[in-house]
Length: 246
Image (cartoon, rainbow, N blue to C red; front, side):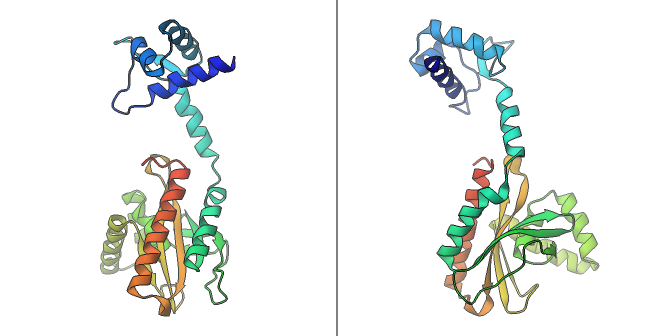
């Protein structure tokens, strides 16, 4: 039984091993897995019965079944983003010696759902559950920059009354989208700054933002470059762990 499962998974892995090759013949699968053709044929028949492999009607070749997508999507729906992000946030806080925040969008606001405090005595602390309008702060700009443009525009119109101010703000969002990060200075609390990067999930869905809170006077050009590098790398790692494709 165990051997059959192992061999079946060899076939499945072969079917998804090459993005440019979506369909395989029995002979090709046998050659790739180094299994006898009779064994491949028998296992393929069983995999088809369970929806794990499909046979194309036109070519009669084989491809991975849609059940894998169903299983994968169900797993993604149950991902606890906070649990996935926490160890990466803890490592980032130790690395940069600053406080780290995880925020998610909710309506016209973002909510801080997790925080790892700086190991230093002098640090910035924003409360968990704090709601911040999406036009304020680096984390929120990265969120708005990566959601659907029509949705973002509707939020901007609610939060920013003057059209001239909206245009300037949209330019900042375009920069955040292009650069993959955003930086803000004193937008919510004077004397503080924030560096943030987006967390993107399966299907390029905007999940939230990872941000570093710092005291403005501590930021030099060299320090800023370092923090940008660290927060973008950490946000990308979280994104990959929750289903973002490279």
